[in-house]
Image (tube, rainbow, N blue to C red; front, top):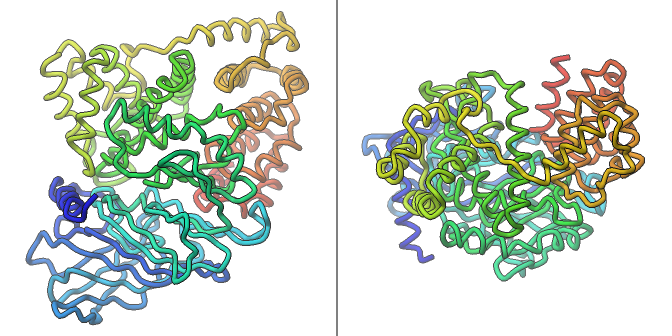
Length: 613
């Protein structure tokens, strides 16, 4: 894309929003917005810091403003400079606000005029919330250390001074120095032939919000899996990763056929060490992925479909603040199912959808009703008013599926594509989506959904009674088997489970959790080797049901907890163990050994679980 076009995109993104207040950012983006960011940093593994400077290009909206406010967290600021009209850089004064535990510290830069560019010289803290620094012993080869970032939601400010809000989008470039023998990759153009001589250089020409800034440094290999896709991973994992991601190009083509051109040029992925705290992070041009999705049979590649779907919902059209998180994740979850259906057929998609919806319904018991809405009616003044971040995935997708079912795909698919096209490279709110929904669908087809029902979906608790539940014939047959097995009428050895796909195992294990006895869990384990399965989604559900049943799985469970740092798995498992009087002390011992292997985000979540006990 040519420079003029990109500049227009950035300006459009800047002007498209009125000043939506983001309570999680100090930035005054009603006064000034970042249009471009340049990072010049050096990675110091011995001290676990990044140091150098960030150069921000600015678009001044309020011509009277003389202060630039940036978000930071634990950044040590050395100096700030501004570029004068003659090109010379001069120092200016700055101050850091008092620390706020949630938001960090505002960096307030006093300016004698409105500069086009500002440089902030700084270094990160070893405890930066976005960065995990792994020792060589925590990597597969054991030879070199590893570092990776996780900036979502507001952790970018812990490794770069930015306007850390999804309301502001900017292009970026970078030069990163790293130790010899290590590769640096970022959420930008990655040159596979680069050697790092003179620093690793990157450029992201499409405007992104700060939470999509991403970096990884380590012993990393690369393998192309398609004409516009590649996978990066530690050398010992690259073959398995490339094999698992072989359908990536088909996924891109499937998504394009539904929602228009892929606008990010390449879709590469990096499989990170096991301590990566989430399943995947949709960093544009380089999705960050957990190794727990590598099952050896492509049974968990819906995770890749989900992160790819973000190339339209989330990355292309972004929630304007985290209050509107469902616009990112609810839409993406819906699009994921459509991609899965196109690639693997209606039967698999229907099973996937049923498991997703059942898990959503089960989660309601653990979520306060006030947090079960897609979005709060409260003013966007505090994250305390935000709704549950997990439920918005399936509930948002369920709303879109309901609209699709009633409108028909011939009507709904162009409608959804229009949302992406008309809001491309912009940030949006729920009100803006509702306005688009009415003008482009409901005004012409009011029978699809009444305002009262729409309000129930958006602002009400639970799942509306009008929602149609997915019903897979294969899972219905499995339910009948499960019932007779729980009663002891069907022997474990007669379960046709060797022919089950991962979704069937996940459904079965979800439904026997809290119902099966220790003896039954032991039979399942001995018959099908579940404690040794290479499918982490199955393993997690097996371990959880075993802990609840009182079946001793300490040996394989300890191995699992020591090697996997994904919050989705470890937090519920520790929580279950702590509630079991026979396992509480053992769990404390395991966590004492495992904690240093986890990302700071995961550590915080598990620490909270332990403090509740």
